[in-house]
Structures are given as C-alpha cells and as structure tokens.
Length: 380
Image 1 (cartoon, rainbow, N blue to C red):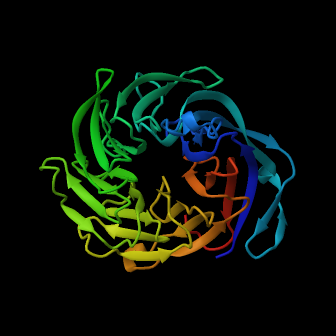
Image 2: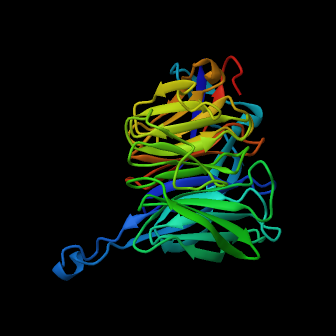
C-alpha cells in the first residue's frame, strides 16, 4: 500500500515531552494535551545536593488545532510529490492555549465521561500523585485541578487507565501503576478518588496498567520484570489470573481494544508488538517486530484495523492489524522525522481530520503533528 504523509508542524515543548492525548469528547476533538518531564540538574555539582532526592519538573500543555487555507505539498513513501487541491489545501497547526506547571508528568488519560459537564483528564506524576483536572468552557481552553491522591512515598506514578471507555459511568475506577512495582485502583465518587485496592504486582517498576475495556473486573499490568499479568479485582490480588513470559524484556505498553471485544495489544523493550485474544493468553495471535522499544500502543478510535506505536529509538509506526486474528500484521508507515526517543503517540478523534496523529519525542522536546493518507486500498 502507498501512503502519503504530511508533517504539519513540530513544536518545541521546552521540557522533555513524554505523553500526548487527544480529547475524545464531541466539541473538543481538536484539543490536545502534552505532558512533559525533566530532571532538575541546576545544582547537581554541589555535594550537599547530590544526596538529596532528585527533583523532576514538568507541565501539561494544552493545544487546539487551527486550520488555514493555503498550498501545501504531500510526499508519499514512493517518494512522489503530489500537489493538493480543493479542500486538501488547508493547513493544520497547533495553538497553545494553556500551560499548567507541576512535577514531572509520566502519563495522561482523558476520562471517557464528562465530569460535572466538562471534559476531564487524569495524570500521574513524579512525586507519586494521581491527579484529576477539568477543562474550562472558555474559548481559550484552560485547565483546573479538581483533586489528587498520593499513591505512595518516594515513588513515581508511571501509568493510568479508566474503566469507563465502553460502559459509561459517572463513578469510574482508575487504575495506576508506580515505580515500586505496585498497581492501585481508586474509584471516583463524590469528588474524591477513594482507594479500592493496591497490591505488589511486579518485582521492579510496573511500567503500565490498563483495564479490560469489556470486562473491567480485569486489570492488566506490565513490568520491568518482563512479565505481563492479568488480575481479577473480584479475587485476591496476591495471585494473577495469568502471568505471561512471552515478552523477553520489560513490558511497557498495554491497551485493550475499544472496538472489538477480547483483543489486546502489548509492547515491550524487546521491540515486539503483540496482539492477544484475552480469552487465551498462552500465545499471542500476532507478533510484529518494529525495531524499537514499544513504549505506547494505541488502537484507532473508530475501528480495530490500525494500531499506532511510539517506538522509542525507532520513531513511530502505523500498523495494519486488520488480519491480526489470523496472525498477520504489517507496517503501513514508519515516521522517523526528527525523533529522539519517541514516547507519546495518539490518534485524533475528529472525523474532519482523518488519520491525524500527534506524537512527542523526549530528548529533543518536540511535539509533532502529522497525518497520513492512503493512496490505494482502503485500510481504515
């Protein structure tokens, strides 16, 4: 398949960028969050400071997509340059509307349901907090902190996920993971995150946790101990319902498919993207090596035929997963423009911007806005 790719913009985020998330709510599909994280090294040469805990600063940056009409060019993988005409002459860019300073941000996830009528998102940070923020309704789109909960002492919050992507709820559960190998579950109720349970899930860092979107009694976790595990919240959390050693290095990304029940994709430092049937976790359905640690995986929000990966030292990949249940996956596009440790990637939900993607690169603190167009054979 030939595809054409447009890089609309690259934004300097100042601090190192590690997380991007498009808003899923109607009326806000053009809103993008970028989380940043940077070690404070201002006083690293002072002996008295070297014994102190490291300080990590960061922020959440809020952007909106702007659209202009002008002539642009488009370059395909077959190296042909095409001129865009008509409606395709529009140009897209990101306008920053707010910056919320805080400790270093490790992960961000939008709440799939509104909170008090407004879009809200959760995050975990470098001082072990899980926090909830809400967007205001002004044209500028700013954020306000609603609440926070401490996950533990002297730890980093590493990931989070909401339980209400399929089954909508005003009192969803939030699962989080942390650098001490623990997974925590809280419930959002009456303006508070109330603890439900917490347990030691991995021997080392618990890089990732995620709900099964279709059965939210099940929580998945992946750790630096090279283990992918499943947990049933109705049972004693000291013992997982499965423990897979299929990945050969640390498991750092998991997402349950929001479109097709039972499908699950995982990624690891071992450079492999795996797709699983959640009913049978002994062997994956499909396995694709993408040439870099798979730090983030994102199913396309409108169908189960595409997967987006942030692939650390090998850029970002758009994967054809239409036949993954038959053991087949293939790379549609490998995006590697100006990437220095790709950590964040997400699909825009808007029908107006088909296959619009935001990615972020850590060491060169870059936020990229790009889009791909299929030139033959409709995949999605």
